Image (cartoon, rainbow, N blue to C red; front, side, top):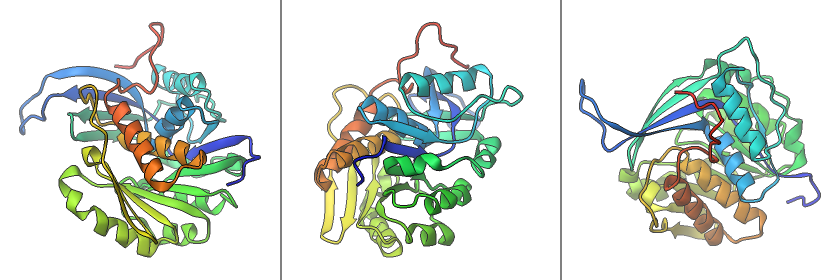
Length: 298
């Protein structure tokens, strides 16, 4: 990877303000549950990856849609700025920030999205930062597949880490990726589907021209399929109680990227990703501590 670029990692994804509500267990239909914790955070995975990677010491940037000039958008940009994440974003005071509400217990999460402007806002964002980084992380969710394809095609010689987020990649996105240098493709599956992890990775390995496909499986850790075989790395035993699962995959990506950029081998990088994910899930959902004066949307 090119060592003389001004950035270590650039992340491409939508940006939204997120509220994470933690419950002990999901209620039955027409029932209810007591919320034990409320935290403001970021979405999608790209912004959380950027902030987490910056906190690990990487020179990090984000390419994303703009947010509104409301308290939610102001806080999102403040988190990026405080973490020293490079960006070209300016608040749009005539818009409401994209919003995501997440209900999380210790193993799963359910989300409710109001993100239309976030998706459409990615269609024409400047992509010049892609050429300034040693590694580019691109979220490839189905809802932003067109924007992700554009980012991939404009990445030039920058190596890529592609995150599918559990979605099925579109044919156009696969074609674009197979014309670039993709270091790894990452996706996730539910913990209850851990027995399918190798098959999921192997299927993606046949579709993408990449040396590594990674499948994260929550508390079961991660599985990678490469030319040399299968690598399994368990998640470390948490030293504290799991508080939420929002952003676990993003934290994994940040830990993995930090390790790869530090010349770690694959098992070491997978272990670093799992450790970062575990730390994230035992910490508050906020990407960095919220100052008392900061406006936290409710």
